[in-house]
Length: 168
Image (cartoon, rainbow, N blue to C red; front, side, top):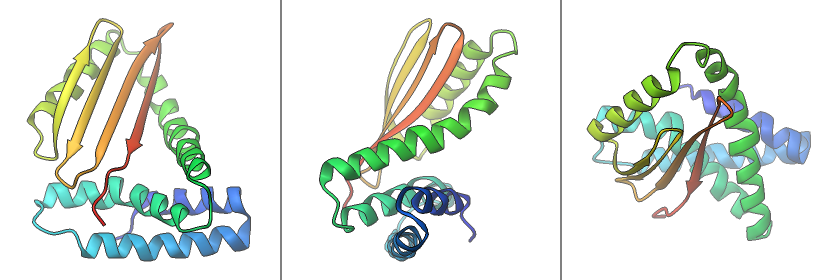
C-alpha cells in the first residue's frame, strides 16, 4: 500500500536534516512503520486503513527521532514543527476555501462531532461552544490524539496534536 504521508515525511526530514541524514532517517522511519503495521492485529478494515494512512506514520516518525540521538526536547520540537508547519499548514488552504460557504463552521463542526461519536476508531470526549470545539480521542491502540478546531476572527485553524502513549 502506498502511503501518502510518507512523501511528506521524507520531504520534511530532508529539509530539516539535509539530504544524507534526512534520507537515512526516512529509511529508518519506513522500517519502523513496517514493523508497526505488521504488529497491528485485531482491527477492523476501517481501523487498519486509518492507522496505516494517518496515525502509524506519525508514530514511526516519532520513534525514529527518539532513536536519532536527539534530546527529548528536540524530538518534541521536531514533531510539533512537523504537525503544525507541515500537516496543519497544508490542510489550512483547503479549509480556508470551504470557509466561504455560509455557516461552514457550524456545518463542519456538527458533522465532525457526529462522525466522532459514531466511529469505531476511537472513544471520544468532547467540549464545544459557539466558536470552538476540542475533542480528545483515545484510539484502541493506546494512542491519545487531541484535535483542536478553533475559529478566531472568522479564520478556521485546525490542528491535530499527537500525544503519544504507545505500546512497543
